[in-house]
Length: 396
Image 1 (cartoon, rainbow, N blue to C red):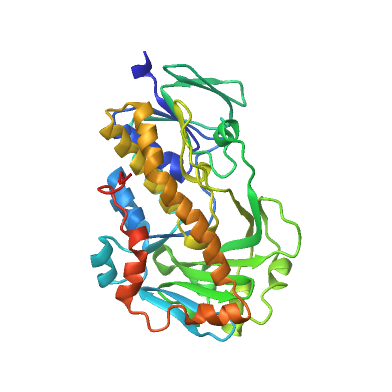
Image 2 (image 1 turned 180 degrees about the horizontal axis):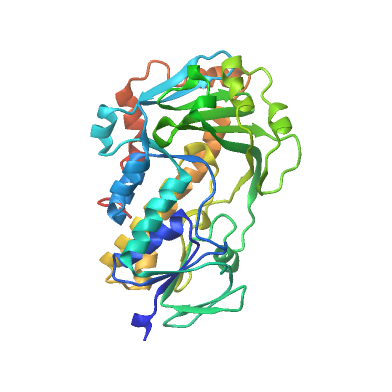
């Protein structure tokens, strides 16, 4: 009977849909439980390294994602006080040759849409909305999930891809989150309203004392993503709210006019008070495992949150393939293949936030870090991150 049951995926975001695609490719049917009233995505732009495109290809949606992305010519970091170029990394042909795929920027909704279309086209994925997981029970052969409406869902296994405030993680791990005190404001601005002197085909960051600003093109250059981050003066609670133009303009003192103009552009903002969790060594609990932000919530400084969820999904699928769809063995292999890599992202992201927001003498050290570095040396330093692919994902 268990062979006729679906795999249940808690969460219909990027990680959940990627997991559904990976599971279907291993012969399973899937039931996705989404807590929202509809399957969708919020947010603005995200950055995609070559590792993300390797994952899209492995999940069968590479062309969908590629058609919606904007391919940058370089990544660039400026000092937001004096406009000094801290680092500039070309992401053109040499980059693609090195890593086998491009660097790109894309609207989060377009990533989600590409995965959703892929899942719907399989005919093997059922979606249930307004179905927030409340409690999980297991026996030797199945998992039973109870949602907040009282509905009961039985499956052969459970993938907890229910985000940074995962109910699945809360039941099995129940660890505290770590509020950073860093607040992120995100918005999308139409090209006609975006400063002509900043319309670069690049993933651009301006780093300043206790703050930074990011911008890059979206949707064929018709829109621009604008992200600003600052250290809050008040005690923060983890979550997303509507932003206040007055609040964001009260920060960023001493920032050069060219960068500061970014904060005056958006007509409305979304405000994220950020948090992460300490990395954990166990994600799998019987017939349940964690994936994406539920497994390794991180801050945004490495621009790898969505990429790691995509990698997780591909690795889970490969572990099932190698272990003949034996969930106990596959979950163990999946976890061993992912824990150290994703923990490195969480910890590196914290350190990168410190580097971005350096002040005083630390700022001077930061500005000297990559002086004179060639593209090849940058690429060597990125090999651990962008060299991931389906062929090496089970390295553990």
